Length: 355
Image (cartoon, rainbow, N blue to C red; front, side, top):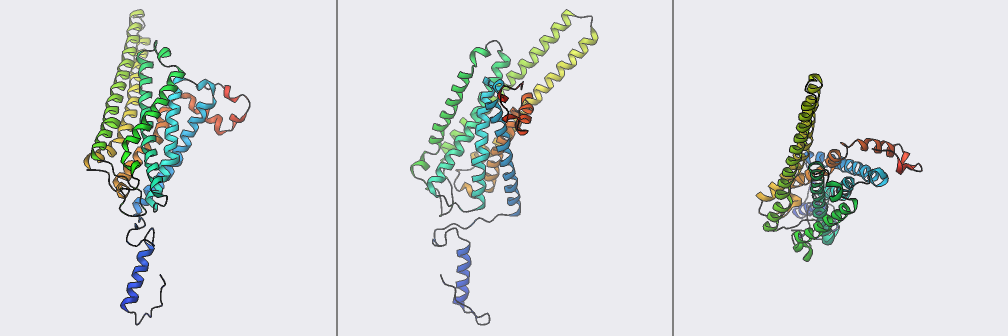
């Protein structure tokens, strides 16, 4: 469209309408499709701040989880069944920070220019990776439960080979689960978009309800139940130790008081750690699934500010996971120091003493 000059004193109605049409074209994602193109996203100041924070969280998520991946993969002392589960969790959280969060930020800031097939692929990876992260948390919960409640059976039930097999099955299961969740979109990509230049999905309310039960309610109940059993086992073992000390050495009252104080401290520490794990998980996942349950469907989710914020909360869980599951381990600080000071490049560094 060619813009014709217009005299500022004698501007005709046709010239004014021409200028308005030009401005509208500048606001469209695809000006060549006037009637079907989406408008370019416009962000409020608060939304811009949230996106800047999300960008920082994405970088921090990649950095922390990459440290865990390198540590467990490089140092031989860390090749244990528990650390294999932590490694799998770190990989899923690393992909969240590297792929999902940047693309989600891009969807909010600009028009979608990658086509319907890439849009469906992105949504598939979103459900797959986030669900796999949840599956890894469940496996870690089972690992903690068996290690504390059945310590004598743990070496038999949890070998490195068995854990690696469980991790592969976990990723494979959620790969098929994500196909079921997005089967309609995979058959007909782009069926949910209202204009050209957006990436949205339509998810049936029945499927949303199934996902709410399978990916939230059941895992939450299971995790809380397991951690309550773990906490009760820790308290029971601490009391048994306290009773043993009282029976064997009843005359040493000073030592008894110190032992009792250490027992109380251990109980409080266990309760605090387990409480943080459950609280962070619920804090990050509850808002999204509550919103999904209230709404009739998830149509036009990319334009919903609340849902975008809830997505960021779920992604933020991937940043908190390494802090909860790895930074509490004594070996992490030693491994991180060796990696960041480039001592990892020295010959034989994989055999360094970490534990």
